[in-house]
Amino acid sequence: MEYRSYNLKSFVKHPLVADHLSAQEIEEIRVVAQVFPFKVNNYVIEELIDWENYRNDPIFRLTFPHREMLSEEDFQRVQRALNDPEELKRVVEEIRLKLNPHPAGQLQNIPEINGERLEGSQHKYRETILFFPKQGQTCHAYCTFCFRWPQFVGMEELKFASKEVQLLIDYVKAHPEITDLLFTGGDPLIMSTRLLRAYIEPLLDAAIPHLKNIRIGTKTLGFWPYRFLTDRDADDLLQLFREIREAGYHLAFMAHFNHYRELRTEAVREAVKRIRETGAIIRTQSPVLHHINDDPDIWATMWREQVALDMIPYYMFLARDTGAQHYFGVPLARAWEIYRGAISQVSGLARTARGPSMSATPGKVAIVGVSEIGGEKVFVLNMLQAKRPELVDRPFFAKYDPEALWLDDLQPAFSDKFIFE
Image 1 (cartoon, rainbow, N blue to C red):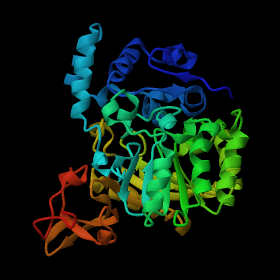
Image 2 (image 1 turned 30 degrees about the horizontal axis):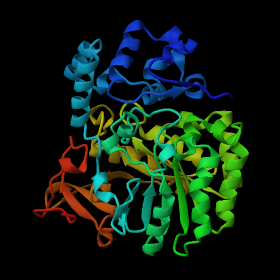
Image 3 (image 1 turned 90 degrees about the vertical axis):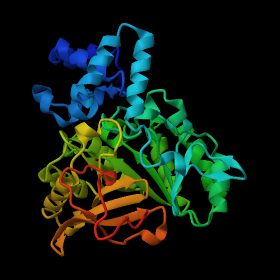
């Protein structure tokens, strides 16, 4: 399949879009996409979306902005400003800044070496450093819930991107506690293999003894599996994966799937097979999302099919406290019920999925359950990962709140503060 991308100006040119969307729906997409990024491609449109039921289709909701993603007041403000570029710019920027564009204290996690900041990196957890290749700061299509949406809307002061691979190597060498390097974005696999090699080959040549695992965080399997099949450099990309493995690294392909529908095309199944043949291990993750996958049967089906395709279910996350969280967010109590309902339907091979977890400022906080202790109903929580490593795997409690969507909505139980405060 030849790759074709559609943006806010061109999406109505696709026949399936033009034949199905009403003028009002097109107008609403254009209004909301002034605030949130919008990009889609022909694979998503032609092979993933059920156009006979597009209004309720999970992939349509995953990629096409919806009116309800903005408050009605903000929607009206943007719509009124559409014909006034200066006013539109002012209104949009004001709305974006209200939407917590950098959740989980990301700006606090930028490391330094020899007095120089690694602007395209984050080092939040002791063992793992994140690296944002400069040319990987876009995606094949945009998820409407994306917590890194500032990467795509021109908020340069809030954008992570780096091309300084030597600084990264120097930093990792100076920190023997680092075992894992995660390439992320955007999507690093939007880059050509030639560009990706320019980042990875110096790392392999450096042969840093304590660096054991290379991870690639990507949505490419879900949004453009032809990257591994028919793209001009598909074979070279898979060869690069082999070279990483042959150099002695564990290669973790961190695949993002939000619904089992993304697993069912011939292209994605063949792409998974080709990736696995290189020796890479595919782990899967997704947030639980209202309107898209907030149903235990969807998750159980997704995990079972992932295992059948030789992938490892890894994480169920909560939608982060950014962007349109009011639209996509699932209350913590409901998320735990979804997780429990899904995990109880699958065998032990799929119970590798951890969660539901919040990637919050202090770390990854999992909801272990809801319990009653001393007559008080509480959330039982646990730190799966933490800025302070001594907090990992330490259960703690929060007062039960059926409306809470995020860690910041909770109050500590049996104490005046949480263990990370």
